[in-house]
Structures are given as C-alpha cells and as structure tokens.
Amino acid sequence: MSKSPNKNWRPATTLVHGGTLRSQYGEMSEAIYLTQGFAYDSSEAAEARFKGEADGYIYARYGSPTNDMFEKRMCALEGAEEARATASGMAAITAALMCQLRAGDHIVAARALFGSCRWVVETLAPRYGIECTLVDGRDLANWEAAIKPNTKVFFLESPTNPTLEVIDIAGVAKLANQVGARLVVDNVFATPLFQRPLELGAHVVVYSATKHIDGQGRSLAGVILSDREWVLEHLQDYYRHTGPAMSPFTAWTLIKGLETLPIRVAQQTSNAAKIADFLAEQSKVAKVIYPGRKDHPQADIIAKQMTGGSTLVCFELKGGKEAAFKLQNAMEVVTISNNLGDTRSIITHPATTTHKNLSDEARTELGISPGTVRFSAGIEDAYDLLEDFAQALKQI
Ligand SMILES: *Cc1c(COP(=O)(O)O)cnc(C)c1O
Image (cartoon, rainbow, N blue to C red; front, side, top):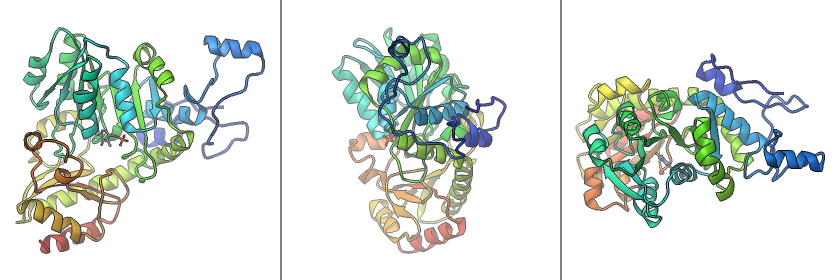
C-alpha cells in the first residue's frame, strides 16, 4: 500500500509523507529493506519481470523498495518524474554527465565547480575523447561564446562553492535549448527548497545528499533527477550496469533527513543571515558574500531564481591565512571541517583544504584568497554562534 505523492502538497508535507510505501504490517516509520535481490513466484514471473512486462524489483543494483521511497520523495519535492539514488554526490554527478556523453562531444562548464566536479570535466572526460571548456559562468556571453557544433552538455552549480557566486540558470538553459544541449545543475548549495532548476529550464538536477538532505553528518549519498524520457534514454542502462547504487540503509537515513529538511534549513539560513550581518560590521573582515544580503553582487539574479538566502556565508579576513587560521583555531562552538549543511556549524579554509589542488591563478580567478573563510551554519542557537565569532575575532 502506498501513499501517492500529492502534487498539491507544499514541501513540508511532501517531505514527511511523499513516496511512503507501507508493507502489510502498516509500519509508521519507513522500513529498511536490506536485501540484495528479490524472489519470484514462478519462472514465468521472473521472465515477465526481466522482460519489463511485470512491475517489481529485480536486483538492488537496479532499484529496491527503501531507495524507491527516497527517490519518490525527492521527485515530489523537486517536481521531477524520475530519480536515481547514488552512493555519493560524485557518483550522481559523474553518472549524470557520462551517461549522456560520448567521444567527440563537448561540455561547457562553469569554472567555479566543486573540486571533484572540476576534475571529472577537466581531467576525466578528456581521457574518453570528451572536450571541455570552462567559463566564468556569471556572464551569459561567456557561455554563448564557448558553444561548438558538438556541444552536448552545459554544467554548473549555483550558488558556487565557496564564494557563493550566482549563475542565471534560466539564461543558460535558454542557450542550451537553442543548440540542442542539456543543462545539468548541481543544486547542493541552494537546496531543493530555495531553487528549482527544472522549473528554470534545466534538464537534469544533481545533489550531494551528503549535505543538507542527510544534514546530520551520517551518510555519503547523491541523487539524480530528471524527466522519464531522459532517464530511460540515457541514465537507466548506465546506472544499472555501472553500479553507483545507494545502500538501502543510507536511503533510510535520507528519508528521515528529508522529514526535517525544511526546519533545519530554515534555522541554518536564519543563523547564517545573522552571522553575515554581524561579520559585515567587523573591522577585521574585508568582505562578506551572502546571497541573502542586498550587497551581494548578483542580488538581481538571486531575486529572480531563489526563494531563500543560503545556509552558507563566505567572508574574507584582512589578515590573510594567518588571521583565518587564528580565527578557526579559536572557535569553540563552530568546528573546523569540510562538510556543509550539517546540524553542526562548520568552518573551512578553502585555500588550504577544499581548493588546495587548484593553481594560485585558478584560485584567484574564483575569488579565493588566503583570507577567505567559508562558514556553514548549523542549527545551534544564533546567539551562541554570534558570541563564538565575537570572541574568536578578538583573538586575531
Ligand atoms: C559535496 C559536494 C559534491 C560531492 O558530493 P559527495 O557526496 O561528497 O560525493 C558535489 N557538489 C557540491 C556542490 C558539493 O558540495
């Protein structure tokens, strides 16, 4: 017995009830089906399922009930027809790109990408004869100029990591449509609650569910969402035969994570906004970038495509690396780590950790200086976080 995702539900309701499949026991909390495979009532039933003539699961690498619940809940939230759960965000992104590309094709990608994503398009794809052009994604003219006759995929994240630059998703989608290419959007930083890339014209949305969707630092996970036609034509066979499938146990932690996603993201965003405003007034801080503030360089695009600010704040300290290290080391509530979207507040120094593999030149292009710090707001009390920043700044 299942509850069908009701289109008219608002996100908070969808995230509690969407996609639930109850077994004959009527369990309240979703069951975890930790099974590799499924039994058939007869040889004929097995044959029919393999032929695709009968509904039902075949093998957990292809799909399984707990994963199905997670995928259906994500589809209902995102407004997508199909989803595939993966073992990590990078498995989702690599599958979403590689399943639709072949030798001789060309990708245009924004240069401000999560480090591993940049490796996939810049280093991995060319090994298989797929060319890639990286552009400053903030200017639509750069996307247009990079188009070649063999351009098949556009790829971007917005807001970007760590400097929270914003890209006009509808504008890039329009260019992609004009040349028959598809736009893949990594929507991790915006969360599915604040930005709906499919409605803005993107063809495929990918998440690292490790971030806000789990949001409690427990799981490594990802998900790919799109329309049924694209999934059947491009992703289905790639996903089944290369094996990026998620563990059902992970799917269950994510189902539970989704139930509280709106509450967590609201608290994180409220905390992030308060910290951004506080930092903007500090003399030791050179610059604050926060998508919820009027002084964000792309506030006009944010107003057009996002319905909330961000759970992240990027800021630059005047004293460079030394000041950044001192601040981080002095924080008491906030932890030094490199996850984001967690219930715990996290602070990161991109130049020496997440972005250390880039050349100095590439880091400068992305606006990452030795004094750049990324803050991911948790769900703690805002005043404890403000006090923590105040005492840590004094120690610089
Ligand atoms: C974390 C992250 C990824 C990679 O996800 P994993 O779950 O770590 O594999 C990709 N893109 C963005 C924007 C991320 O923040």
